[in-house]
Structure formats: C-alpha cells, structure tokens
Image (cartoon, rainbow, N blue to C red; front, side, top):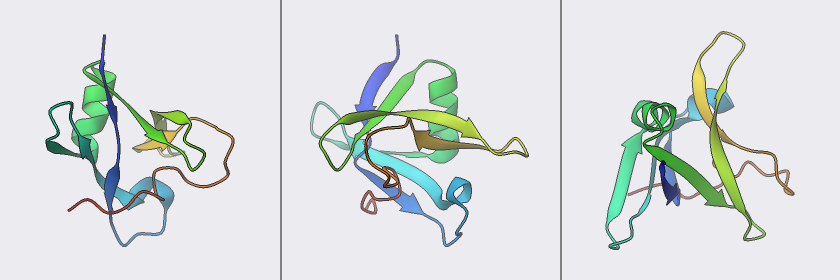
Length: 96
C-alpha cells in the first residue's frame, strides 16, 4: 500500500501549458520535516505504488492527485475532478 502524503507546495516553470508547469512538489512529513520531490520522481513513486498524494482544495476537501497524459504521451500530475473549478495544484504556494 502506498504512503499517503499531502502536497502543500509546488515549484513552477515559466511555461504556460498546464502539463509543463510543475517542476516539483513538496509538503511536510509526519515528523514535521519538509520534503520535496521532482515531478519525475513523484510520477515514478505513484506508478510503483510507493506514494500517493492529495491536496486540500479551497473548500478543505481532500482531492487525490493522479497521473495524466497529454495527447503526445507526456505524463504530468493533476487532481481528480472535485467541486471547485480552480486548478488545485497550480494554486498552491511555491516551495522554498
């Protein structure tokens, strides 16, 4: 079973395409330490069932983060559909 982690921050590139925007994700572990993963490492961890991620949307609802693919096959992270039209990942603050 995958370890579940909340994503609390991201680092973005200067690209405008949603699937190219996120460079890394981060959060705080159960011991209160900050963690940060590259997009590629996060995707591999999800695919290998090592990690599962979620965000809390603007209504405080837990929304799962999943792997999506562009029409050309590039993988990126997005959240499952929820009750808000905001982009739950891109709305997060920048990681330090």
